[in-house]
Length: 68
Image 1: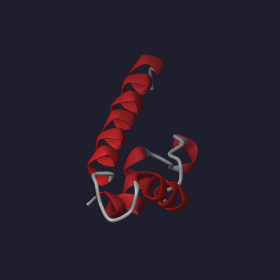
Image 2 (image 1 turned 90 degrees about the vertical axis):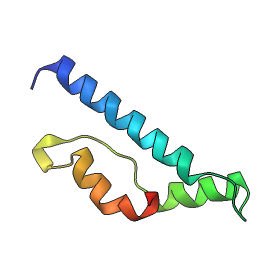
Image 3 (image 1 turned 45 degrees about the vertical axis):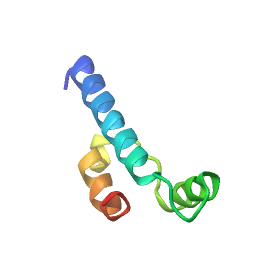
């Protein structure tokens, strides 16, 4: 895969992730700091690794329920 194509893909995935977090972090009973800390603990950081099959789709599949 071309490096520029991969970079574009990763950037698009990061933007999608950020949009989902913004939607998820709308005002609630928890304050922003508590909610952020809880989410960080529950959702692992996405790290692309094609050789081990760690794609955004596989990562999102494991964490989709947090964003719905």
